[in-house]
Image (cartoon, rainbow, N blue to C red; front, side, top):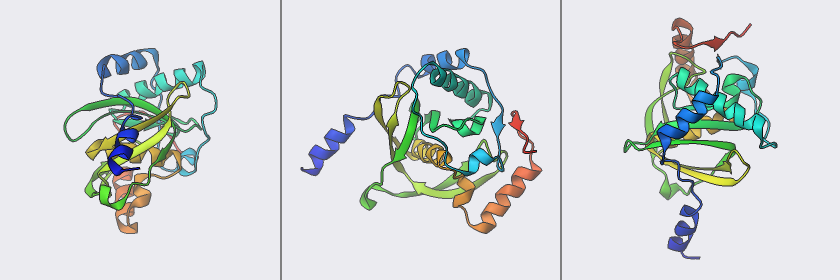
Amino acid sequence: MAQQDTDERISDEFVVDTEDCEERERAHRERGTARPITVFGHPLLHREVKDVTEFGDELAALIDDMFASQRAAEGVGLAANQIGVDLKVFVYDCADDDGVRHVGVVCNPVLDELPAEERVLDDNNEGCLSVPTAYAELARPDVAVVRGQDATGKPIAVRGTGYFARCLQHETDHLYGRLYIDRLSKRERKKALKMMEEGTPRYETVPND
């Protein structure tokens, strides 16, 4: 198949996550309850979590809580294990580099391995709600495609560029037990953890007792 035909076929699969963003996010958030955020050291953040297999009311309620938790912590993306839930699902409310807002949810996400010619590394600042008050520069591809399922189990694909691509990669990493600081050099990782230790989160967190 010609490359142009392939591109058109793939693009037809992508979800439209830029419409009615304010209304959709607000509806989730108002139904949900904000939960405290798990932080570095919590066991669920350091291993792969379980696949979503049941797409019903319980999952819908979790997604509502995730949107409420994300807003309370002033985040742009949140994975289920960041509120202590052992399931592969993340939500996002993130703008791309053009200022276009994207709002959605992905269950059981898997990132596409994009051809090298389609990727340019973007070395930019990155932070994480689970590593509060710490930031570090981290190079990631400036485009990302993640495939998974929506809240009803329907197969979906989400494409992001720039900051939104970083968000998709960051949240997918979470569900496989990897924090962004795990991608840093030992020196930079140590520096980030020191920033976290010395800082005070602006939102409620789960103590690692």
